[in-house]
Length: 110
Image (cartoon, rainbow, N blue to C red; front, side, top):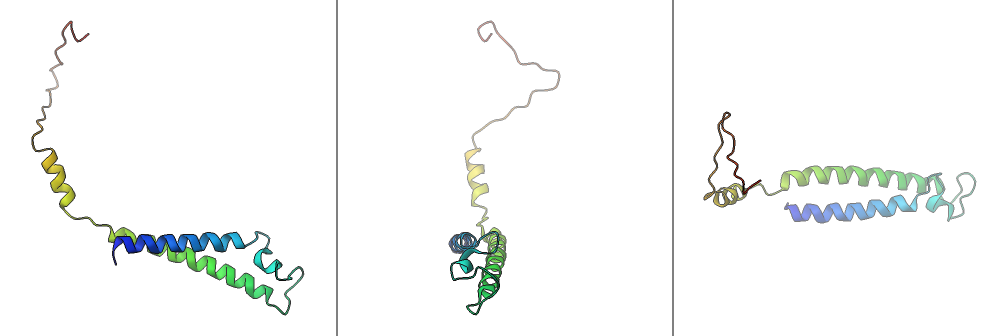
């Protein structure tokens, strides 16, 4: 799988995770309360809705974690970057002054 495919999958999982978390209510009401669940579990399956949202949240979070780790291995790490750096630095000369040398200063530079 290519890196771009992993990025698209990560974005899809991230959006789905955001939507699932926004549907939930911190107190457990969320989507289930809009279906008439004020008290205990009713015939409509309020508890099942909470379980579904909870399991979906955990599943999407684990899937996102796994996709991010797998995308790390899919990043293109060819030697082309090193070759480009070598070509860029080809004409550059570097000189390292000795420890006892100090750079010469002139009146014009002060």
